[in-house]
Length: 121
Length: 236
Image: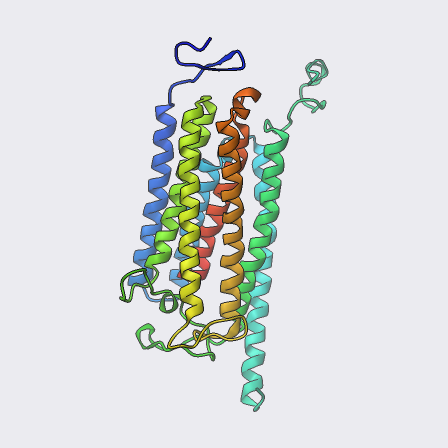
């Protein structure tokens, strides 16, 4: 039953297609981009001073990596628009979560500082 | 099965039966699960940001940094160990862990690609590499935890105190990397199941390798979470 390139299982022949060279190339290119971006992050971590600028660069490069992992590896870029937006739009809630909690954290820091100046612990 | 007749009458509206998002039920549900999981991880990482903002920062020069419970530690001063060599190698080991996880993501997409071509041997090969990558990552994490818990000069780290900084720093280290590691562990277990099913010809009989795609989505998501943990826990 099994002949040519297929193998058989319970009587029906499975037709194995040849590797998609262009697709595999794209996978490796994506991997290379991820590795290079991570490398750049490393270089910046040890050559730049800490501060708002460095943090912004890190956040930006993290989003670049997110775009490649979700878009290419998870294939979201090639799904229908409704599916893309169903996943991306709810993420906007996180923007508020981050904003509110960092403001809260900072307020608590100020309270703690004030508390220690009046002798509390 | 789907009745396409009702669709022909009104092409604009979804008449039921066929997939409205051109993705199967299983894949859609995996996407929405990952969405909820992303919110969970955001909760943990935002808690890290909250805690860090509510503590003092070290104001001096990075090279003059000393550990103290009075301010939040600089991560590159905490994670400086690599196996076998007693040298100061800040963030090198996490870099290696990041590399391992990215590579295992690559082998996972290659498994998905082989599945599209009904190439059983290809799926088996790449799933095995993905599993090995996952195990390598978990081993690295176990080593890193042991170093972290071992602490400095006999002062160990636990949930109530640690030699690096405020208690919350170690708490969030354990919770965030632990929760991520648990995800990797379950990913490895699921990948082993998929490899087993592939080997016994389950997907050859059903006629497609969509299960490989679904666990692939999960595996890439876990990789993505690590990208965020790497940035917000180790780099910033």
